[in-house]
Length: 194
Image 1 (cartoon, helix red, strand yellow):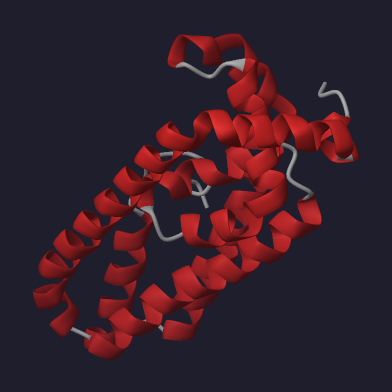
Image 2: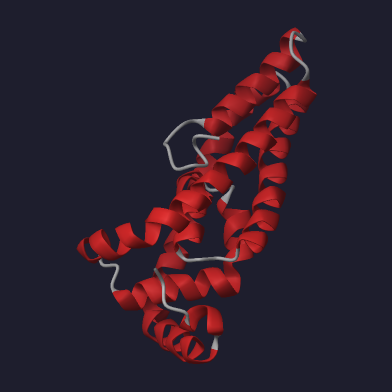
């Protein structure tokens, strides 16, 4: 729950360790770990969304320019979350760094809560439930595989982030213009932010 709220904590490791403990000792029930993981993920993201909704935009406006977050880029972020936020929330759950901030960014960018809740719950179930169940079914074998899997997933994540960064850099002007045009027509984008 705390990792989903934005704190850098090892949630994946905790889920996998708990599942392996269940598989090897049978002192815990795997259902309990799955329920706790899914519930914590969903609750943490909802609290992160609330924090982002209440405080995020003000902080981004105040401190964002230091990090290159111009008003146009903030509008672009809002546009992305309104138009494509569902997949960002769902797939962001599986990327460690993004997982910590995606809920806060969704709240700050005023993504509709009901849309956020649906994709957040779906992502939380697949992420926490999937990791826990796979680790449980693989049992102690996961310890042997986890090093290579972590390296593989890490490399794949870096490639995807790099490709997205290059795409956004090359298309930022076009995407910003698209967001500005959409802001003129879309009531949610047109509405002033507190």
